[in-house]
Length: 198
Image (cartoon, rainbow, N blue to C red; front, top):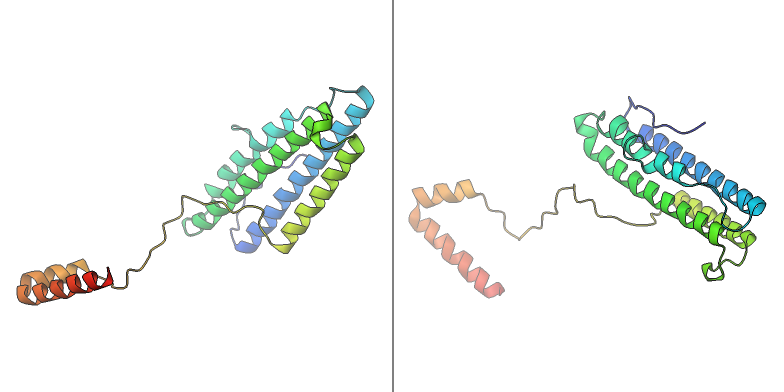
């Protein structure tokens, strides 16, 4: 049965973690099934014949009905306001993961179709072993909690870098109006400190 993104009612970290694992597991299983189908067709039909990976691609990254679109609709838009940031970050990570896996599946299907010497895989058995090893390495990495790639999420707020002194502009404005001499003295001290630091 094909995977479809569930509509979540619980947006706790534990529920999101379970839903994320279900999605990743379904993607791995479908990718493995595509690979096995491609190898079987190639062995039976000969060079240039293999499974069509386009339906797999459309199912996962298609704009209208793809799993990524379903993630946005069923998770991100349905999340409560206080959890949107965490859910949005998770959706971005899953989107990257899905796109990477779909691209990898495309590469492997192309290897099967061409089966050329420059692919680094001299025969289908080597390609099959390569896929199995890669699959196991990725799974081990996930189990260890390590990330394959670290991506910058530009939707997150920037980093506040303290400059050593916190200034309250309202207080400074009040000081300038109510005590001009004191404000002038403070400004001179700041200038001297800035010159000494430079």
